[in-house]
Length: 455
Image 1 (cartoon, rainbow, N blue to C red):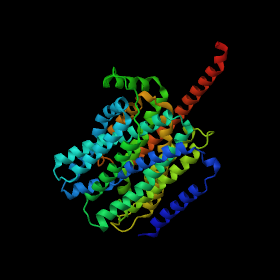
Image 2: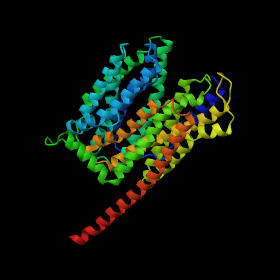
Image 3: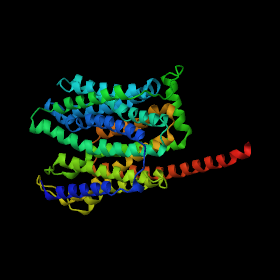
Image 4: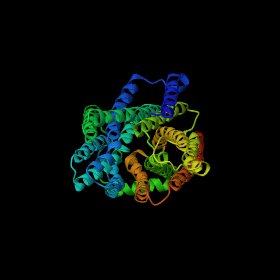
């Protein structure tokens, strides 16, 4: 392996370790043992859920190729997954609010385990069913667990600021450390132990089953609006009205869709960007480097969120601008650095520059997740939390499906330029959100000051 990759990984590892070990009292929030026990239980479950998800990711495409399917057939399977998440996401989100977030979390485990089981079949129809189940599970993963956490946190009377601790630790572990370990474990199963490309999916099922057992035995149920008189359409209308009537929620949804749409597009683009001429690059090691960068971002987020004087709406403007600039690097390098015509070989100079930029983007991803979770906990009403969060994913899934369908229609620089532009728009919307939030706080302050006069 080239020294360049080791230097980048080592430098990131040193920075992450230094940031974690150098935290002082200003960077930490003292919390009671009751909260720590609650937080650790959630982090254990969330890490197991993410392990079940990360184990599958690197091997889905590879498994389909071993069954003899071409790029077109595989693309349709991926589109089915995102389409399923779009179509069924709002339904399962509403059901989670009405019938319980604990039940929805258990449903996620069962649905994803069934999706893993379908990977044993080489039949296209069964694999399609598996992708549809996986899309439903993804909607539950990114709504039910967070909704349960926020509701349970508030029900137990914990301070609102303590939520940021759980959010940042969940991303640091679940989207960072667990992702790296899952990648190494999957490589061990498929490579060293030669257990076949289905082995990571079987391992994922085991982790999901363990997490489900912990949920069943230790979680209590909570709801959004469980009124029997409200059917799904009433819940949909209520969520739509909440988004339309509160500019903060609408802005938050647009920002989330723009960032996550660019992030999922990046997943499809980084490999051809770093190896345009078939250069030999260590995909697994680069993936681990990206996850280490994400850990760096989540570690920084924990410091920022621990300070009550720093507004999350304020620093996220900078995060979006930096992420926009980092994804513009492939466009810049293509115009400033002469393209190499050499086929194969090691990564080129332009690829090295882009890899550093991509690590910066992944650090922004690590900052984004706990920060957007914090803003969602502040602005989204509890009675329709899961429904609204899945409403946010509708434009995201439409965007990703369009990108997947047209991924070969445009040059890669155009795709990166588009993502950079969307992230710049997100920074402008974030600036707008900051202004709206400040005015809302000021209005509430004036109302509180006026209350004694009305007595």
